[in-house]
Image (cartoon, rainbow, N blue to C red):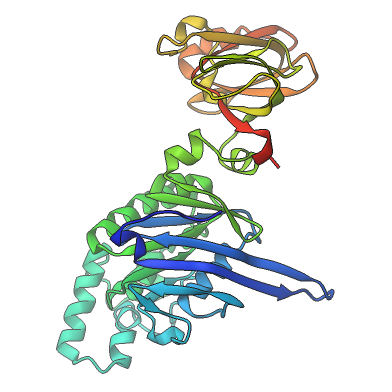
Length: 380
């Protein structure tokens, strides 16, 4: 799958048909990148999201110049990078480990590249101070890395990466070592910083929450290929295939065939209970298809379903589990064919959920406009 964005800003970073193959110790080979193409606009926050081994870090290393492609090209701001060494590319990278110099002060860590470049001391100190202020670390120039928290060290790594104002900043899972609360705080700070700098960020993560929270667009990778690329809402609400539907968020996936279709309305027989009813779909009778219903689209009462006048239906099953998970209840039902579905019920329904018992028959309602159809030919 290729990214098809057009327009002048879409061509700031272009990766064209990038391929990279690694030989395994067992004598086999793995396609880390398989003719992958993607573009990044100027001042855009792009996240490469996928499981371990999907090719996202290999792609980042290829852009930064630390990994050579077997074939394909990388163009940054109109310049081909194939023969440009890593230290001459208009790119900086923030690593997961931060890689700070423990024997240097924070000021010297941040100003290291300026020292190497021979920048005058006065200008160097001014730029170090300005950059530390930008990441919220003013006045900490004399501290050592060991005297800072994990979040502060992460900000030092960011300051060091942006002090030369690169045209492109690459971030390789820089938040993975932080605790949950700090990680969530830094997600918002990173997005704010990106807007202030006005440069493009390419962020690598396997954490879907990070990707959906921070990104202008998300590229979902698997086996060296882009499975889908789009804005977070599009990726979540309209997954292009079964892999994306399962990897992004939780999904209830029903496989079946269309028994009736007319005027954008269709009924799909799945064997899990009553036929699923959908509207706004382009399906034909007899087609094999897969349907995605997100857990939060279900409600315990028909009256609570926001159907936009399109109608609603229900599906019933035996209650297996109802667990409180903070702001919501996680409800799991066993359907007629033995499969399970998951529903996320808001805490406002606490009394009703608390009254349920294992084995009870529970009816879950969904809007006809909610489910998303994945044609059979793209579900493999």
